[in-house]
Amino acid sequence: VKNNQRSASMAICFILYALLTTLLAISLSLSLSVINARKCRKRAVGFFHPYTNDGGGGERVLWCAVKAIQEETPDLDCVVFTGDHDSSSDSLARRAVDRFGVHLLFPPKVIHLSKRKWIEERTYPHFTMIGQSLGSVYLAWEALRKFTPLYFLDTSGYAFTYPLARLFGCKVVCYTHYPTISLDMISRVRQRNSMYNNDASIAKSNWLSTCKIVYYRAFSWLYGMVGSCTNLAMVNSSWTKSHIEVLWRIPERIRRVYPPCDTSGLQALPLERSSDPPIFISVAQFRPEKVRGTCI
Image (cartoon, one colour):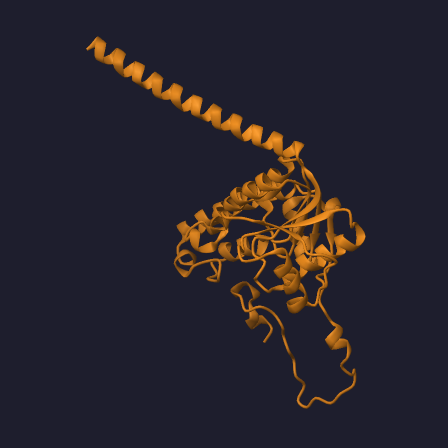
């Protein structure tokens, strides 16, 4: 019996030793990767924009930002981190012109990412927000390992990547279109309203609603912690600014910068023209969170 106990103890000790050795080896490898990347930082702006073919307002912000940097600081290289493997420097430059009328001074450099599936919504049928947020860290790790810029500019709202970028020695700048979580979202769950972010089965259950509120509050705390790691935050509206100020608690580093909407076509229209009956046109993407019914 004693021999069996001694053998079991030795086996447990060996397993623990193997686990500790593996963890130390992984930690050392990761640390060396970060140290080497910090030493090899390039004088460039890295735009973290995994989807460069979405065609939305966020993509227009990307190309206007690239053009602005090329004009103001031509000695800084512009690098785009994208998961679109069919995108090249020339094709992206052509797309900026054809789709948005933005003429870049020269094509940006492109770093292709292969881990984009970890930020896709379908990868996380449950706990989607935290899943995508942690997945973005993994994707940013791939990006920064492949190319470490002096400035890390997030134009897609992946706040959980900011501490990692700071760890790699980057100055972090972000343009936030919409907070990942807002006080309104928490309020809807508390009020038991069934909406795009609150399934009817959860809204009907007091227990599930309480659990979701705890989840949302924990996530909002984490979101505030990682968001506060940015050196400069730009937001697209006063609504977003008010929420980000509450969540990130860095009002001195937040600037409101309205999105670069192209109004040249509208400016050509005459100011006085008959319209009977009056016509109201609302232009926006058809997504659940837009709550288009409130316009009517």
